[in-house]
Image 1 (cartoon, helix red, strand yellow):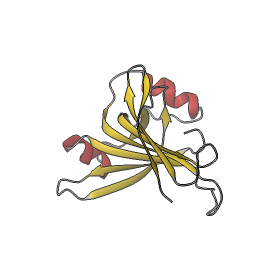
Image 2 (image 1 turned 90 degrees about the horizontal axis):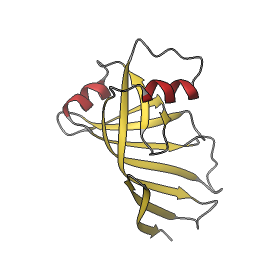
Image 3 (image 1 turned 30 degrees about the vertical axis):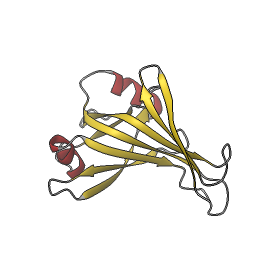
Image 4 (image 1 turned 180 degrees about the vertical axis):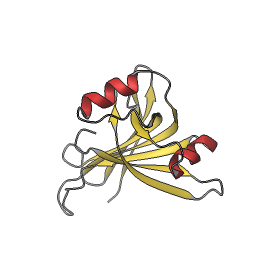
Length: 143
């Protein structure tokens, strides 16, 4: 997650269509993802109606044909009411004052990891996010 300052957030529109947004993010050790945004943005309005969301994070400088890695997270997102967002976000982006925006928290239920440096090419590992950490769910291998 530290490999990229931006992530892509997918939300669901009122008509059930997908919407995607790129944003700066921070995270905690439970894989919660934090960001600041305008409550009137499309993705924020979508989340106000439907909390279902997905996030993908990867280093955009990776080169096709070389070992890749990234993470996909699936869960829900809401406006954050606690101070953890500010603490975690400003630790990563020290020069940013997000006070003009609303804080959001994404809580993942599952994560899907691909890391061809550590795993075989085409191997995806899915884990459930538990209070005590990650619990393996399945491994997929695409030959």
